Image (tube, rainbow, N blue to C red):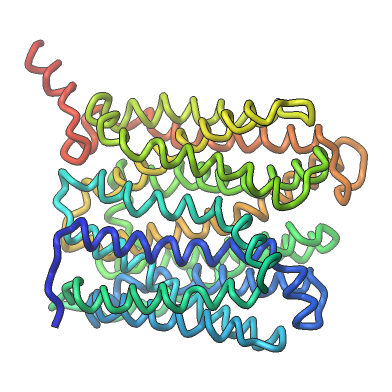
Amino acid sequence: MSTPRSPFYVTTLIAGAFFMENLDGTIIATALPQMARSLHVGAVRLNIGMTAYLITLAVFIPISGWVADRFGSRSVFAAAIGTFTIASVLCGLSHTLTQFTLMRILQGIGGAMMVPVGRLIVLRTTPKEDLTRAILYITWPGLTALVVGPPLGGFITTYASWHWIFFLNLPLGIIALVLTILWVENFRTEDVHPFDWITFLFAGFASTGVVYGMEKLGGDGAHWQASAVIFALSLLSAALAIVSAHRKPETSLIDLESMKLKTYSLSIFGASAFRVSVAVLPFLLPLMFQISFGLNAFVSGLYLLALFAGDFSMKSIVVRILRRFGFRRVLIVNGVITAGSMALCALLSPSTRPAIIVAILAFHGACRSLEFTCMTTLAYTEIPAERMSRANGFLSAVMQLSMGVGVAVGAVTLRLVAHANGHSAAFPHLRDFHVAILIMSLLSLGPVFDSLGLDPSAGAVASGHRQVELETNAA
């Protein structure tokens, strides 16, 4: 029997689980060469392990809300942690590529339930006026994991072995599982509607096609025709999923009702462009530092820790900024600043002083952290309690999909820029990196344009912003 704790305890627990799941998605990137030798395959072939994990997340995240309503949030969250932890150990014990890939799929199933159901628990236990602080606590560890994953993976691989990347999840998983049983209430919905199998199948195929197509295009541009066919089929499947959702909008996995709210749709459309662009930078920068600056993998990974420092610095002032300016103004002004800070990375060169590089990356980390928190919090400010699980499940799937294809988008962009400049994409020049980063900075303006149609008072309950009300009373 669990003893419900304060929202702070529960939020801290969920944030820890988010960190573990997000870290696992990036930490193996620098370990691939050693893993390839151990499994007796080429390093490029190991990419299937990462792709299988991302595809599994994209397919199963949309059903997380229905599963939590049906079996209880604590039961599902605990089972997800257990599945993820056991699969992590089995990944470390794998002796063949097939075994590793199957265990990564199992890991993906656990992660697909762990992240959105954990967020749903936070949303249900947190009052609207405290929502910004709660979302900040669970967003920050996820962003941190994306940054510290590659250098941490490189450190573990260099001084221990790649197996420990997965074995370290065992003590973390056991602690999280025990605290879940002790602290989290097993909330479930009394009236559970039938599962929307048709939309699930169409949406699952569409998500799989997008992730797989982007991964193939990012890893091997020679087969772009096959990727184009996969994308076309994915678009068709997505259209069929939307048609299916319109047939039963009140029970569909795609939350069409919530999409009518500007505060929610912004996090689906404009925010997706932002997530893709921001996910590209941790991929492009280490490559640029190694190929164009001549730095080794470990030092180039350490530079990315400046992004973490920026994320951390913003943690204590987000609430005050939102209370002073409100969601709309912050999303627009900070969105422009974030794009500008990303564009500054296109000015870096081998002669740039390390202190300047660190300062630019830290500044960008602070700006992107604020934008992420605003977009995620705003999405839930107008969602009624009875629709929270559906809205959260659909948004979680979109968030994972946009972040998951980020690296592939970066690889494709870099390849196209290199070809446009008349040389092989296998050996990109410094100018190629600069142009690719500038393109991503323009893409990051998505939420800025989307926020122009946002009501100035949007999300006032969560932000505590009362400027609009004061101006109205004064008039």
